[in-house]
Amino acid sequence: MNDETVSPTRLSEVSPEVEHLLIRALVAELSVIAGGGRVVSYPLIPLFDGEKIYMTSSVLFSKKLEHIKANPKVAVSISDPSAVSGTELAGATIQGEAAVIDDDLHEGWMRLLPLWRQKEPSVDVFLKKRFAMPLFWERAIIEITPKRVFVWRRES
Image (cartoon, rainbow, N blue to C red; front, top):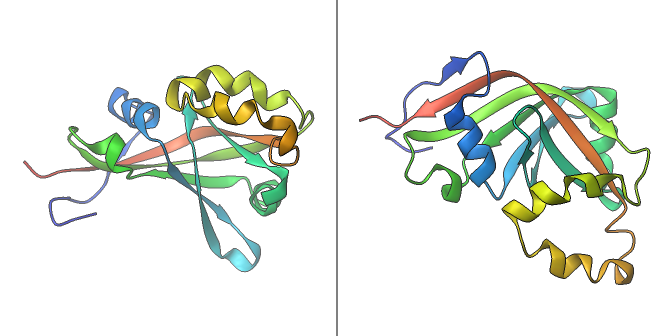
């Protein structure tokens, strides 16, 4: 944040302007509660279907998945310059409840490919190499139901 921002405003739902950030952001910070109540944040690609936020995680990097299973309260923060540029918002934080969907690590996450391709078309280049990096493509879905939304507006 910079000096142009003001205190956050709480919204009751994901507004169109926050939806715009979710769609444009190439990266968001997923914050989870780790052992001892410590907050840990991970940079991930946010995917939004108009209702829920989705992220994926390789099982190679499963610590965040363990944290979510132990405590589903999470926050997703967006301050990616590519997302906030040209908007009135300096950033947004969405608090919610997360669920880890890991019943089909091989292909379950592929249902998110249309959203992923819209955001990052280069994913197909990596998908072609899927069998060369098999564990990277063993992926769980993190499904986040938004509960509270805070936005930081730029001062006029």
